[in-house]
Amino acid sequence: MTIRNIVILTGAGISAESGLATFRGPDGLWEGHRVEDVATPEAFRHDPALVHAFYDARRERLGTVEPNAAHAALALLDAEWPGELLLVTQNVDDLHERAGSKRLIHMHGELTSGWCLACDERFSWEGPMAPQTVRPEPVEGLSLSSSEMQAFDKLRPNGSVNVCPSCRAIGHVRPDIVWFGEMPYEMERIDDAIRGCDLFVSIGTSGAVYPAAGFVQIARYCGARTLEINLEPSIGSTSFDESRIGKAGELVPVWVAEVLGRNAAI
Ligand code: APR
Image (cartoon, rainbow, N blue to C red; front, side):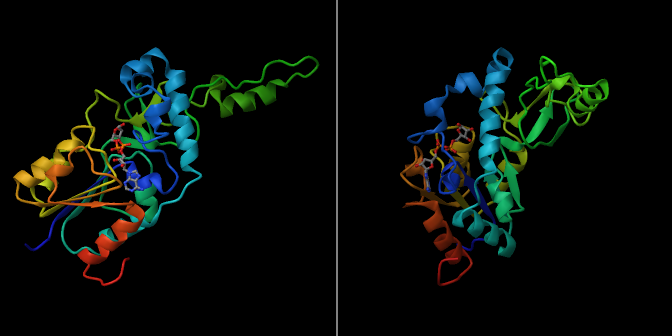
């Protein structure tokens, strides 16, 4: 079978060796937080401060980690593969693009993106998003001059950092993350690519969440070869033609070398 068109699905496991927590592993994100408290639209309506705190902490952590050998190998494959290639990630971190991947879709959104519910614009976002009031409290004997207060207000109207860069609305920006119960992004493009691929590869995902967990079935149904690379067999492991069990940082460079017809690991 000649491999020409490849679709790769990644999950939290590919970023584990960079120091980012997975969701369902020991010390996973869902160990310390209840999904329904931080990853649903209802949770955001009910307690936006808690939800912002969860994503602000993850956004801050992102600034302290780097892509690993698995991200780098996939970026090289992207640069060198002559056929169709689409990297679909469930991850909201930016390690794939920081490693150089271009043909990439974030189906669950991105930590480095904000979405204004007032004007419906999306835009890149750095730093905290929680609309904390940081206006200085009056201090006995210390009064900020009106020009200082004005300068301060210009920086942070009404003390908030949560200001839409597009419509200037305050407090309406939410993390641009696909929460449970919401539709993942670019599903049509993803579905087309899976139905047209010769090889479907799943890396570092438990197969616990749909629609991503069902991609292997569609790929098989459409005649593609299927490969899983994971630390342990995933929930849908038996659906794959081949399963390679181990760390992504070690196995993905070897696999990429094979695909590119190289002898040694990338
Ligand atoms: N190398 C390869 N695989 C690894 C590694 C590693 N170094 N470390 C962990 N894994 C594997 C685990 O064995 C597990 O099967 O990665 C998988 C991570 O699974 P989850 O924590 O469930 O994460 P993921 O599959 O990405 O979750 C899917 O669920 O919570 C939602 O929206 C969230 O995108 C996420 C989706």
